[in-house]
Length: 319
Ligand SMILES: [Zn+2]
Image 1: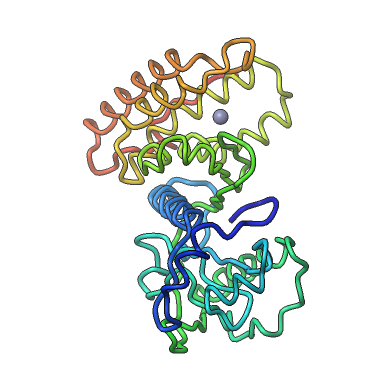
Image 2: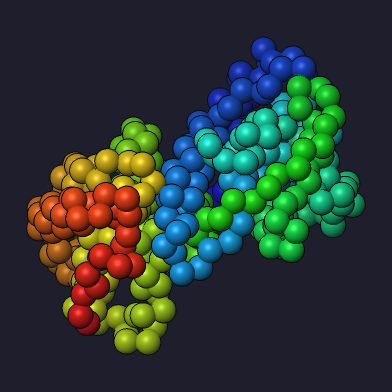
C-alpha cells in the first residue's frame, strides 16, 4: 500500500499485452515489492504474536484500488478487472495465500457486501482502500473469519479466511521519501530503501524489524510523553536496534542480518553526526547489535523451548 500519490503503470502495460484474461496478469515491480513487504510483515507479526501487547486476528491480505493508479480505466483494462478492487498481495504462509488468493484477483464482495456498492472514490483517494482493510479487521474481530468472493483465473469463487493471531501492526510500502518509519500500529518502508538493498528479503526484514521494534515498544507514545530530546531519541533508537534481533529470530530470520544491514545500508546512508545527532553511527550500532545477539544466544541456551522471549528476557533501557 502506498500512502501518498498515485501509483504508476510501470512494466504492467508492456507485459499485459501478452496476458489473456484467463491467465494471471503479470506483476509490476511495485507489486513484487509489496508482496515481499507483506510477507516479511506477516512473519514478524505472526512470529511475535505470543509476545506482543496488542494482538489481533490477521489473514495477511493486502488489497488494491485501481482508483489509485495514474490511469484507473487503463489499469482496469490491463488487469482484466470488472470492478475497482483487487488483491494486491497475499503474504507467504498466510491464510490469504493458503486460500489461493493471488495478486490481481478481482475482489467482488467482502463479508457478503458487494464491491459494486462501494461509494465512488476520486482518483488518488486512498481512504476507500483503508476502509476496506478496516472492514476486514472488524469482521475478523467479530467472527474470527471473513469471506471473500473473488474472480480468479476467469472463475468466480468464495473463500473463507480464518484469522490467525498477529501483532496488531500494519506494514506498508511507500513510494515517496526514503528510509523507513513507524508509529505504534504502522511500519512504513520506502521503495527507495527496498531498491537500495536490491529487494534482498533479509535486508528489508532487518530494516522493518527495527521499525517494528519502535511499534511494539510504542516509542512514539513514549516520546510524546517525555519529549524528543536528543538523548531520549537516541535511547529509543538503540533499544529498537537491540530488540530487532529478538524480533527477527521469532520471525525465522537470522539475527546476524541486523548487523549485516547496519554495516552495509546503514554505512552507505550515514548522514554523519551533524545530519543525525540523535542516532549513533552505524559502526557503533552494529557493535551494539552484535552484543545483543550474544544476549539472545545466552537466553536461548538457558531456555531453548522459549527462545527469544523478549518481554521476559530483553533488558529495557533506563531513560
Ligand atoms: Zn529508528
